[in-house]
View 1 (cartoon, helix red, strand yellow):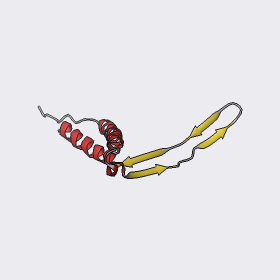
View 2 (cartoon, rainbow, N blue to C red):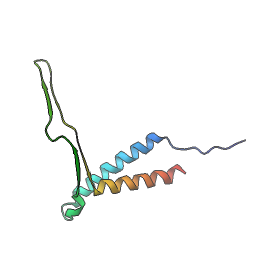
View 3 (cartoon, one colour):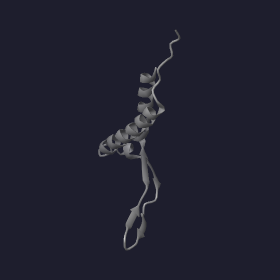
View 4 (cartoon, rainbow, N blue to C red):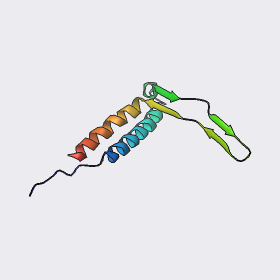
Length: 87
């Protein structure tokens, strides 16, 4: 009787954003060899790792996120594509 619009899950949006940022960042690193502006970006995190060393376990942890113009462009393209398929 009543038709409801089938909408994509928001987890697909998160997946699209992550994949878009990864592909955009990789593409910008590749293009950055010829166009240095593409590598312009921001690094968030710690450069040196956190060490835990016991006799049983050795753990090194480092978290570093890099954003550049390509990853932001990939983010925007991923959101646009998601909105296109969501309607």
